Structure formats: structure tokens, C-alpha cells
Length: 239
Image (cartoon, rainbow, N blue to C red; front, side, top):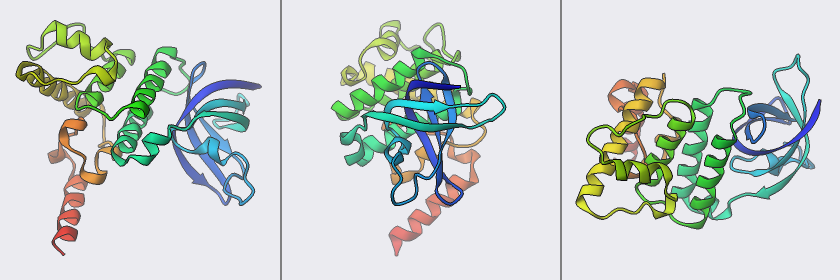
């Protein structure tokens, strides 16, 4: 079967000598894993289609008996250049992609989830992230994935809860003390959810020691690997 679908690359890795495997979140087919043969060669023509955060139309060949489909062509529509040039935006965008990798099942279409990821990347491309960007995205992905809460918790006001789920990400810039307290509680909701659902920590929370208010970190006490990473960073800075 050959079909074309809109997709956003969540992850890629090299495979064999010249191939790559990507995880692509598509509009009509959900999350699928695909192989791009020969793209690591000097004359590979589809390399741009295999890069994380690439968004475009992908022509895919899939056989029912095979786990991996094959990308046979496509057209890039957006590569989010401002995200790629800003390390904080880039790590946050990759964090969103990893959340999609970990919280969405294979081969289950959800246009709502696709639009959520595309909206987040588009707004992140156009403006610098606010401290509310990451928890708002996580709360909305929780809701789309079936883990959302019907009512606000931790005494978060219904109005604030609604804004975190419905307003544009770029407009979530809070300065009032009450709103900042509610935002902190939203971070705690996300942290508890991720600690409960995930069996190992998100890789995108470790690099570059991003400010805690920009992410929803997992509890470091549960993961000795995180402590090892911190020890190495401290030793490097001391030297």
C-alpha cells in the first residue's frame, strides 16, 4: 500500500550503514515508524525529511506483514528555523516530541494530537517560550491521551485551569502572585503524572540544565542515572 500523509518527525536514529529510522506522527495514521533507505550516503536525497521537527507531506510504502514502512518521497513544508537556532526553544520542542513518543500508541490516528503538536511548534517558532508553555502542553496532551482531569486539583481556580487548556501558548504569561502559585501547582500536577506513568525519565529533561520553571521535571531521587549525570556536570565545572 502506498499513501501520502502529513507528518512531524519526532525522533530519528541511524540504521545499518546508510539508512535511518524515524518516528513520525501523522495526521491520518497516528504515530508510525519508518525507514529511509540510503539517506546517510553523500547523495542521499531524503535526508531533510528524516530530521527531528521536520514537518511535511510524506509518501509512504507499507506492507501489512512488516513493522516498518518505507519513505519513498515527500515534500518539506516547515523546518522551524527559529527553534533550531535557539537552544532553549530546541530542547523544549524535542521535549514535546519525546512526550509524544512516550504517551501516544502506534497506529492510532488522532488529528487532535497532531494539531496540538503542530500548534505548539508553530507558536514556539514565532515567540520565545513562557514558563507556562511546557505545563500547558503537557496538560493538553494528557487530556488528548485520555489521562486528563475533569476538574482542577490542588485548589487551582477553574478560570486558570481553563486558560491552561484553551488559550494560545504564547499568551500564557502570568505575573500575579495568585497566578504564579497556580502555575506552580500545574507543574506539580504534570510532575506527578509523569512520575506515575513513565517507567524511566525523559531524556530531554537532562541536557543543558534548563530552568525548572520551563519544564516539568521528574523526581531525581528515583533515578540514580540522573544523579550520576549531575555529579559529572559538577566535576566538569569544578575543573
